[in-house]
Image 1 (tube, chains in turn red, orange):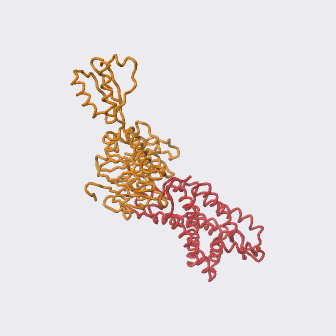
Image 2 (cartoon, helix red, strand yellow):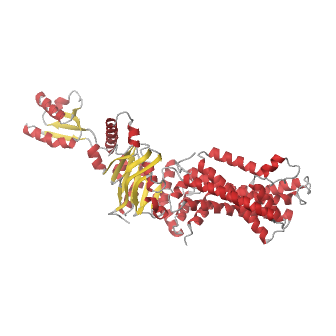
Length: 257
Length: 346
């Protein structure tokens, strides 16, 4: 049976670009963070700061949210490598539409992020037990990570369509990743003691909305505030995806360094 | 799908990368089923742009093209499903050579068993047996190029575009690939082939299109191109008896009147009865020389004409075009004129 073009491209993305070491590092890093950072900080961070839970219980939803970056980065890098090694041009010369290639990248991102969510949940289980996730909560987590992944993938793909140097791409990607992670509520909450400037920056960061919503879902208290988060993430995802589409339409397929 | 035997037909096709800046312009060519068309030209002549236009990787900015009965602009995926493209730039996936082949076949929707069998065939044909379990970065330049051609042949197609497929290949590998392409063309595959190795184009291609500064300056068989643009070639005559000074002077004068130039000879040439000169359209002088000798009762032992080469013809065409451009329009450089206006070159 011949699979639809998008699924063939997704299968190729996994088969060709994701070696075991990459997968282990991508999932291993946040998993180790849960184990080491969670254990160490649980003994020094008061539960009053983390909303009445242990630091590990605070961290696990943050690491789940982190998966949207993992998925986005994987997809962005896949695209960059395809472009660098002329596979984008080669694939576009075959029986595929540009939209299918982009769709394949998005689907790869989503699959990667969702697997990451599962891995983080499994790693977190021994530390925090079974979270109070309802069916709506599970849906909320998946929707959040999905939208966040599309946002980051779209952003990096749009960036990848414009840049012509690997150095520039990977430098910007690392810079972006670092700041997005540390200027969010993944590792720490925004409290009354947080400097106002930092608080404003935190709430300009989609990862903050994602981390907060997933925490609410884990605690079984999704509310109207989370609808705002979905809206913000949805809007940002649409904008980033739009930028990626524009980048694809106007991209020069010629050789890059 | 054919239009009078043509699987590809372009009319005034062009691509401009900025207003008034054309990478290729007024390209009108046709490709028959089973034909191998060579695209020759200097670096930057527009060969790769032409391949990218004809494979829908670039949208034409002017002119029309019908490929396999479909408009190039709207054919899209349905059209590309019948094309094969070996790009000039290296393209690869980060898996072994063998896996690359089957993965590419999978992308094209080739059934698994057929893909496996074809991968074996390609590995054998392109001598990739030792490299089959290696990743592409562990291959030599020649192996990578062979691999890239082999990978494209994993799926069925009606037209194959090859952009400098033999770069970096040794003579044996090149011969093997060219022979394979010739066989495939006999089987009905149409091929568009770019190369800088003119001897290769001479032996492989049914017709050759010469591009210069984004324009098509010639389209014909290699033989015809050599005949028309081969330039001055050396003709050597050896008379049974050395010519007298008077006869030698007369012959030299007559030949000069017909455009020939005497070639300085070794000191004892007169004594040997040998005369060497250069002439354009050298073959056409031979009957005249025979007649001249016959009427004077002279016997010619040997008459030989240096073989025309495609390289000579190619260089001749480029020079002729540049001269025409220089003569045609004062005040603008020839490249500017050729790229910026229509009709600068036929």
